Length: 179
Image 1: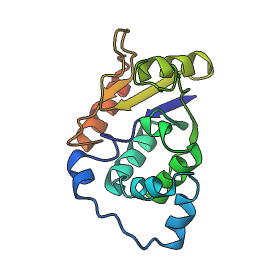
Image 2: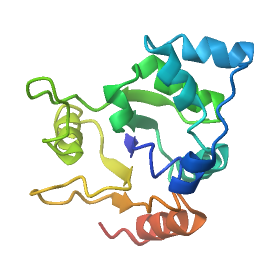
Image 3: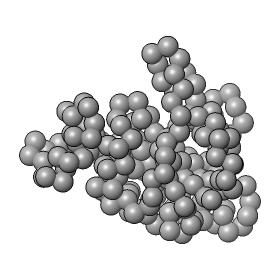
């Protein structure tokens, strides 16, 4: 099995996209059905508009070219939004890949992964899912603070998100068989 760990901010949206997004008050019925999946409906309404459909299409291309079996949500969006909301929002914006789970939330007191890096959450998920033989990690942050970076990590730039250039780099690396 081959999975893709997905961050959202900086991968499926960019700094400029977030600054220029138009939050609409009048939602379509489909958008309303997505927003109600999260208990904080007002923040969910805003978040629904923070995913760039163009970058979601780039993700679809990567999923197809890299033969990804499932997507794992590793985004900090897990702190504020339900898994069901994130999944529905991504599908609403055109995601064709199958979302099969999310990384664990490491909680220290009342704080989520702000202290403990997402890299450790990903490693824990991999340790608990031994049927995964290959993986790709997309994130715009250094998620491996103080630990060895896992092979398969590709860092996006927050001003660009998931670009065709990065997709080509990932596929070339996959074809060459280098870690």
